[in-house]
Image 1 (cartoon, rainbow, N blue to C red):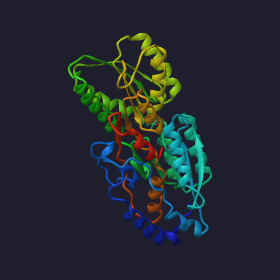
Image 2 (image 1 turned 135 degrees about the horizontal axis):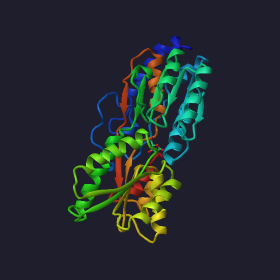
Image 3 (image 1 turned 90 degrees about the vertical axis):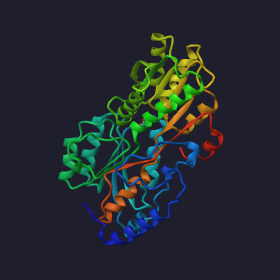
Image 4 (image 1 turned 180 degrees about the horizontal axis):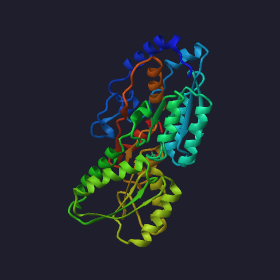
Length: 368
Ligand code: AHR
């Protein structure tokens, strides 16, 4: 594995300078990754945080590597292109890991298939990349290929979703959102909203359009919401089915829910794109949704199109999952290059947004 020892000291100094320059009152996700193993504090309403979620590109340290003529080769095993969130995540990596910034990026789109990601990781090992970054499709089944990377001496960094491995020395660090907390924030928001509507004691029928089964984002959000369900005996989960994090599947699942149940009060969509599909299905069935409609629709991610949907009166609320991990992973790599230790688990703070807020203003500043 190539090491950039000569530039390490300068890189370390520049990295520290960049971290030190971070704006104190920026939204959490404009900051450097949270360097703590503790989960982030309770999700703040968006108005408590700056609206723009763009993490500052790390145009600092890598430039030194470029100047020295040695590019750091990074293989990124991406999940796919299933959602607006994923597109923003890919763009974050592509705009960060540029030659100008001192990197050569080998990007692989696994089309939501774990076997494709395993093949991509093996190909990165063969190509002797300096670092492997994985956003794993699902949590389990990674030990063998991570052992192979370890054997080859290539550090692995996890981003976005987690892996469930018995030996955590198989990866250097993970950076992403706290999915359980996102689900719990959603449940708390719903309780407050129903209370405000005078429906706090009413029997509430819910359905969930889950994400890809076995993906951290699905596992965590389902668990977080289940924790809140347990606190409300009048909430009933009628059904849960996977919408694979896509709009088309979200629509299909909602169509089938609407055929099976005529009394749905709330639909929880485990990402925004599924919600867009669900909203189409609700309208096609002659029902209405949103703050003035028959069905409350909530989702996760907080992409720009979700703001447009809330402004249009279709979506009630969206719970943020920040996709701008490119600069965060670059910072981890620069620290490793400098011989520094990095925190194993790095949660990113996230907010939520609903129709009581000044969504037009927030959208105008939104990075994704
Ligand atoms: O892992 C993050 C999730 O994956 C996002 O919520 C979703 O949009 C994406 O597909």
